[in-house]
Image (cartoon, rainbow, N blue to C red):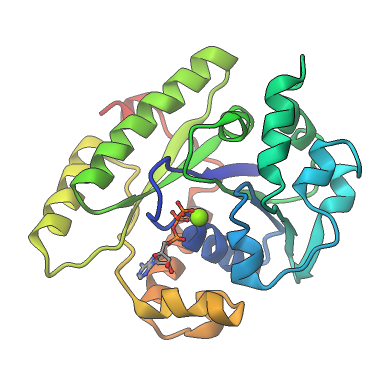
Length: 257
Ligand SMILES: Nc1ncnc2c1ncn2[C@@H]1O[C@H](COP(=O)(O)OP(=O)(O)OP(=O)(O)O)[C@@H](O)[C@H]1O
Ligand SMILES: [Mg+2]
């Protein structure tokens, strides 16, 4: 089972768009996928029009077992949703002795999936620390601009800190350049800099594409909303690449930049 968090503390860089379309693309390739929403903004529920009876809050508060909070969304695709109540759960965990790593510990009980994909909120809070301490891989969507690249370098340091604090070994196995527009110099230069610094883990860029913005309005992935769009082509290529990686792990040297 591969556990992948789609994470960047910078907001609006394409984390949810990537998590939704990656999970959907993998499930269409006969992989059994659990998509987890770790963001109280509930963007997964909104993007896929899910109305699950229970969510992550219920599990973290001990009201409902985690497995009962998971909702089937279609062939090969389950979701564990979140609502704004997740903020209360985070507060609860932070203030209860011995509960700081409860999310990580609960997730360790999950089995039977080929992939767990987690859509993370834009923060450095306790739940994101839990998820980094649980997952083996971090995918970092990074906007192809100056501030985006700066955030990526900080994410690398955060990952290193989590590994040393929790004796863990999560690795950045994909940097995903997002909001890419090849007509602009800043996008081209930033992409080149990403490839230089994070040699070997940078995926194909995801181009700016309005269909990616529209798909959530219809509760659809890009593959069912606009299968011939550039968005579907770019995320399709990413899915193929992720499948091809198998469980090959990226070495420390590869991400040393
Ligand atoms: N390649 C793209 N082309 C055009 N619009 C995009 C693309 N990727 C994402 N968007 C749009 O940009 C906005 C932010 O994307 P998204 O919600 O995926 O980012 P996020 O990193 O999850 O944000 P947050 O940090 O708030 O959770 C959304 O309106 C989304 O539809
Ligand atoms: Mg998001």
